[in-house]
Image 1: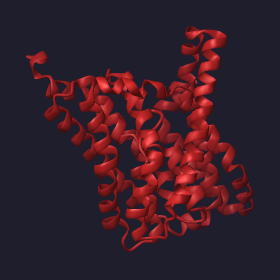
Image 2: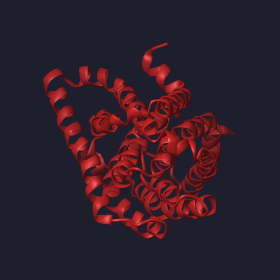
Image 3: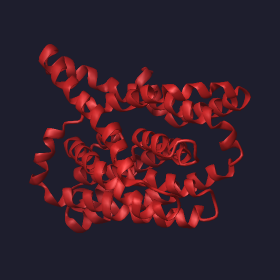
Length: 326
């Protein structure tokens, strides 16, 4: 089994091992706190590889299917944030307020680097998935600070200008570097050679994420261990909210006559949230608090949910296009 496949297939296992080792080492050896100085490097390592294959210039193609574009914007930026705030209210209203803020942030930041991959595995329309990711990440730069100010500001002090600055730094710089790298690789080696490199990019990003999670968890091990029970509430929140979002994407697709290929792009585009950016914002905007915990724990449960809907993809196709299965 190739390294990339091994990493993808057993990602929840690697995340669980990563978090366990980080807690153990961080609790027994508090001196690992010095690793926090490496956070900017690990953050860039997470985001830069996934940005290389993100084609922002393809957003213009979205006008060919305004229904899909409208549905993605509505679900990612008008529906999901209030739902996340509602879940945070019920799960964390008696907890550390930064847990609620971190959960809202986790739900608000859209589109992981795996959206296109999951769409491809489900035989959906990968081009549509890439357009949703590119557009959502650009809009997130401006809308995540707004929603954090409105929704998370109920629990903690939120500076939307600072979050905007962090989003610009965390998203825009790797995005520009990725675009420049893609153009260089294609010009220098050709499209065929570039396409042979692309499958390795998600693995590089995942390795960066694991390093980032280890660093964050190990430097906050004592704080997390003292609040271990909240991990189960985070898992419960994601395990209940994310399937609802995917189910709503399917129902919207049915109502708006969006075909199966675009439906899977939409479903994964609104459900597979971006761990890397969330961790980066939580670390830099709410450093030293439990706001980082939802982002660190989320990969444990998000992956099984994505796999669950992958196994349901034939039934989803039948639901959307019943005439093809008579």
